[in-house]
Each structure stands twice: as structure tokens, then as C-alpha cells.
Length: 71
Image (cartoon, rainbow, N blue to C red; front, side, top):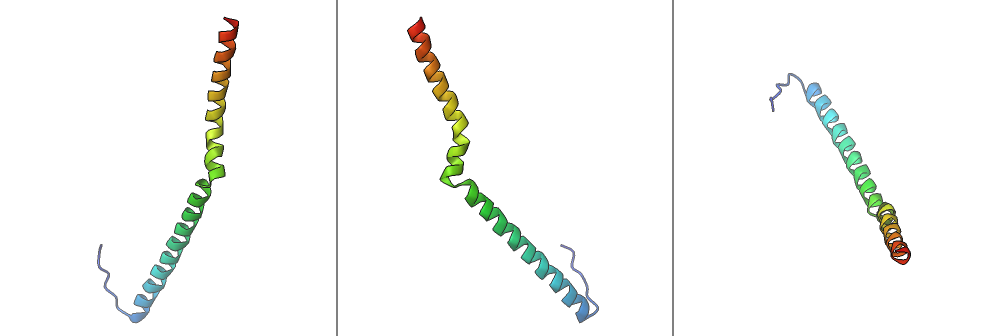
């Protein structure tokens, strides 16, 4: 990181305000990411993602049983 040389306290205060706002933005982004992760990990959402796979497996099992009865 390049060190900045300040010529006034106002410039230091301005950079500190900017850094504080950037930190607050990062904190809010982290909160949103955590909320989204929690939502994705709800059992309903996890099972919702598995539903198409379960359907395919069930259809293939039923199809095999039907083919055994026919053949």
C-alpha cells in the first residue's frame, strides 16, 4: 500500500470518513450475504432443490417396474 502524505487535518478527516463509510458498506454487504446464505440453507429450500432429482429417480424406478411386468 502506498503511504499518503497529508498536508492538513481536514484531508485526514475526509479520508477517515470515506474509510468509515466503506467499512459500513462492507458490513451491510456481509449482512446481506449472510441472510441469503441462511435462506438458501432452510430445509424447504434444500428439499426444493432436490425435488427434480427425486422425481427423476422415482420415474425411473416406476418405469423399470412397468417394463419388468410387460417383459
